[in-house]
Structure formats: structure tokens, C-alpha cells
Length: 103
Image (cartoon, rainbow, N blue to C red; front, side, top):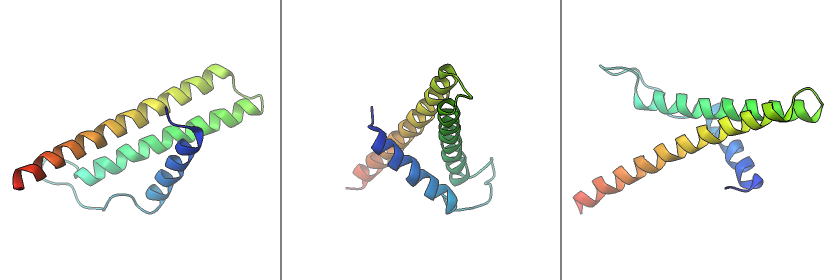
């Protein structure tokens, strides 16, 4: 599991990506939304889960939320990040395979 500092840096980087517009904007293709739009939505959902987790943590520290709410929010964020990392790893794996066929 990542240290709190690594997680905080990743969260900050993700926030900067989303504020700057993330993936390039392009219109939907013949069958549905573009890959970049889907990717931007996925990153946005991870960012939203992180913000919810942060809000629950702050609410607990001020006595307005219980521990179970915080644990649930953190677990949801963990699942969202793990899913996004799995998709990223799969994309890299497929890209490497396609590059191997050209050499």
C-alpha cells in the first residue's frame, strides 16, 4: 500500500490534470463517446471519490461524522484508484505488445 505522502502527491497530480482539462477533447465517434472522454470521466470519478474521502475525514476530525463513514469513503476511493491503475496497467501491457510486433 502506498504511503500517505505518495497518495497525497498522486491526488494532487490528479487534481491538476482535471483542472487543466485532462485528456484532449474530441467528439463522440460512431458508436459512442471517445476514449479520451471515457478516460476523463474515469479520472473524474476517482477525483470525486478522493474529495469525498477528504470531506469525511475532515468531518470526523470536527466530530460531525463517525469512523464508519470515513472508512467507507476511504475504501471507495481505494477501489476507484485500484480500478484506474488496473486499466492503466492493461493499456500499457497492450501497447507494449503492439510495439513488439513492429520490431
